[in-house]
Amino acid sequence: MASDVGIVGATGYTGSELTRILIQHDGVDLKLITSRSYAGKRISDVHPYLEGVCDMQLTETDVEEIAALDLVFLALPHGVSMDYVKKIGMDGPRIIDLSGDFRLGESRTYEQWYEVEHVLPDVIDNAVYGLPEFFRRDIAQARLVANPGCYPTASILALAPAITEGLGELTGICVDAKSGVSGAGAKPTAVTHFPRANEDLRAYKVGVHRHTPEMELVLSRISGKDVRLLFTPHLVPLNRGILTTAYLQAVEGTTDEAVWSAYERRYAGEPFIRMVRHPPSVQAVRGSNYCDICPMVVERTGHVTLLSAMDNLVKGAAGQAVQNMNIMLGFEETRGISHVPLSP
Image (cartoon, rainbow, N blue to C red):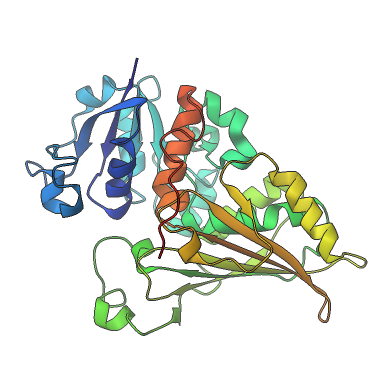
């Protein structure tokens, strides 16, 4: 028997991607898609690629209708999601939140970085961080899963084994990541408007990006060590994709093969982690839930250099959310998201 699911906020890039994936998932029935801005329209009116594939009508959000679901996805901005969690409650459908509202583990850290008062400080303490490769057992039992951010997913997956295995120094960790424009959301801005973003490359929020504490918190939890890092994100003229390069000073005696072996051991059997011997590319993962990782040691400078590539809208958002849903509902983890990457 199929599980009933819904999407609150279905017309942004993430909500649209969730719709695309869920209508092809044979274990669920997509019962509800909502939009405050486009209520009354078909989702295919807003996203023409869905014409004839999904012509469901977008509705206003109705808490009673949500209460009848088995699971609901909240594809809403930060500061808005927590209000909906408060309305839905923790005794109703299981919730996967794709905003940053429940990722940081405590309200004080959230309020410091997001500059918004958290309305559910007790709930944020109990939300489960939805990175399956490290928190699969907790996700399976969770009532509320905080789906990771796109940059943290790419960065944590790249860094965690090196930090956990003590292959690099904990001081001076640097993360350089480049994301396609869809990561900034569907609403254009002065920076993401085509004439500004095309044929350009720019860094932004250097050292102060809100995904920084998320990376530090989760890496510290995974490794049992106090992790601090410098994170520099960049906007590149691509629709989709994140390419991340992380650097650690290698511990003396760390070799290229030792690093490779540590990563192979840690990610053995992980369905969406692909270990590659060459620097990965975003084109090789586009449209898929894969994260390609290439760890190496640059002997001349003594750096452990870790590269990862993934689709920010799939493994970085909607695909990972469905991966979490599969775990929560007892489905095969790859069900509905084993798409082969697009090429070219």
